[in-house]
Each structure stands twice: as C-alpha cells, then as structure tokens.
Image 1 (spheres, rainbow, N blue to C red):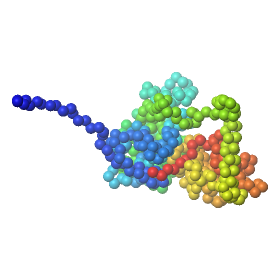
Image 2 (image 1 turned 120 degrees about the vertical axis):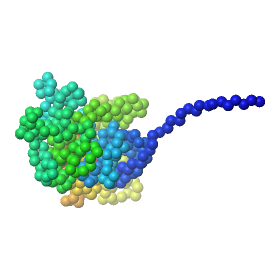
Image 3 (image 1 turned 180 degrees about the vertical axis):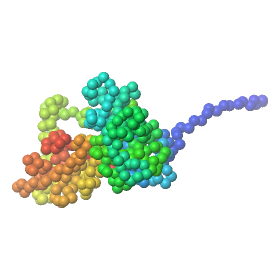
Image 4 (image 1 turned 45 degrees about the vertical axis):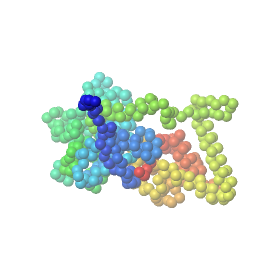
Length: 446
C-alpha cells in the first residue's frame, strides 16, 4: 500500500479578543474597584460596566473623570475616548486616577445652549443679525463652515510668576488667543496661547490654595503628554457661568460633531431596543377604578390621582405598622421621620461646603439637589438646590400641631409628614423653590 504525503494548509488563527488590561476606578467615597478590560475600551464602555455591576439606573449621566492630584485638576473623559490612551499620557509617578460619578451637565448645552453661551460672550459670522434660537446656536459650533467666537476677560497666571493678570481673550476654531492691547481683535494684537488638537481643558480643584487664583472658578489647558505645573495654561473666570461657557466651547471646538454623536447615541439605542425603558417619558397614568382600565391623558387628573394613590399608600403603611405591636404615637412618628434615611438623595452628616462641592461635581444645572442634616440645628434639615448655576440652601423646619410632627419649607403653609413626601411634592411642583427638584445627587460605593 502506497502512502502519499499530502500538505494540509491550516486556516490562520485570529485572536478572539484584544489583550486585556487591569484598570482601577474610584467612586466619590474613594472606594475603588479593579477590573480587567480590553485594551480598546472607551469611557462609555467603562461606565456601562459599572452601571451593570452596581445595579445603577442608566440615565445617561454617569461619567468617567480623569483626576491628576499633583496638579489639582480634573476633566470629563468624553464617552468616545480610549481609556488606555488617556492613561498613556500619565507619568509613572503621577498617581492619576479615574473616577466614576454622575455629571448631569455633560450634554446639557445641547438641550439649552442659550443658558451656556451668554449673548455678550458669543460672536457669530452669519446672516442671522444676531438673533438665534437654540438649534441655530448649537449648529454654528457643530458646523465647520461657520465661525463662532467666544470672547471676554479672564485672569491669567503669568509664566514664571505668582501674580495673575486680567486679559481680553478670544477663542476660535484655530485656538485660544489673548489681546496685548485692550479689547483689540486685530491680528497684530492677538497672541496665540493654545490649540486643542493635542490639548484638553481641565477645571482647577483648589485653584486659590494651589495656584493662588483670584476666584474659585479656575480652569486650564494642558497638553496631553505634559504633566508639569509649568506646562499648564492657567486661567480663571469671575463667575461659574463664564467658566462654564469657556470650558464648554473648548470641548465643542476640540470634538465637534463627535460630542453630538455621543449625546444622541444612547437615545438611538433606546428607540431600536425591543425593551421598553422606564423613564419619565415612557410612563403613563392609568385608571383602574372602572370595569375597564383607561389611560389618563389629562395632566391635572393624572397628578391628582398620583397624589391620592400616594396618600392611600401611606395610610396603608401606617395601618400595617400599627397592627404589628401597636407602637405608640412617638414610635410611629419616628418611623415616619426615618423613612428618608434610605433615600439616595439624603446625605446625613454633610456640611454646607461638602454639599456645594458634591452638587458642583455632579453638574451645575437647574434642579440638581440633595437633602442633608442641618449643621446648626440638629432638629432641622436643609435642601441644597442648584438654580442658574448657583447653589442655594433652604431650611426644612419641623412644625408640631396636636402632637403630630410635620415638615415645611414655607413656614408651615405647606406641610408634609416626612421628607420623602416633601421631596416628591417638589419634584412635581415648584412651590416656593426657584425650580422643581429634578436630579438628585447620589453617591455609590464600588
């Protein structure tokens, strides 16, 4: 029997996945978790991973931050950015960190651009005669054919000196400039500072303490591969709205349409997904009182039904509580008071400064709030709320009547049996507040 050797060509073996890397991510309470991830993972992928691992509600506000402690600066890592690429710019001994937390303001400028770009700070070369609506304004930033410009005064740290000086700055697609002659925009008077193809904009975490900044509204431009304080272009605004305008415009000039794609991508997935998402836009009010159920289309009727159901639920809860051992009135009152402790919006021993820092970190947009214990009066609580990029604090006072304890924000005119009822009411009604409660500040442990 003859055997003939036959050459067999095996198919090329392709790797099923990219090499893995281990990264460490921190949360706001400084707990951390190390996870193994593919080397091409993006910031959005990391957020989705931690949303799943921690059973968070995905409201598209979870964000990955880059923090550089030795420079006391941080920035939002854009959803599309490669996390490994970000880390490749870190020095070996820089102790840079990744933080996972909420940022409600991340894409708010797409929804309300006129709030982010004050008219006196924006110049647009177009035939609109200076009158623009929301969509026209944002389109000028996204379109490469238009020439929007941000301008105004900023404090700048002079290179090699401790002093800060005020200059007139101009931000264009080509980069950031300052005028060496008043407010002149003539080319011979504009001095180039930075461009953004290989730089990012960061906020200063302790600008006054670390850099001697004149206000708390500091930010800087940093080249991707440079990690020394002397390489930072340090700037400082006079108020939060001004800083937000400059930082937002720099993000838009750097990434343009990519930011808009990041903004709409989750919403497109929701439309194509067969699973119905539970959001305030997808829930409907139903009436089950008759023989057939019906959708309640009248908003006023829906609100009254919701309030009635809430009160009914509380009455049943109190009844169940009293049937188990029949606690005294004071015990029942204590149970009612303590109902807020488990709520994600309640932060027990939080100082005024800590509350301001937490709200600032999670986004200075209307309706971001938290409830905390009062530091000055142990029997009262404080509602901390953001409105027009400013944080305001409202005392929640106890009101006692006929042996029953209530809570009120308006000297007893509107009373609530517990803080949960109070928060639910002001999520639906503005009342004495400057705006409704919309986004609660939540801290998670990784």
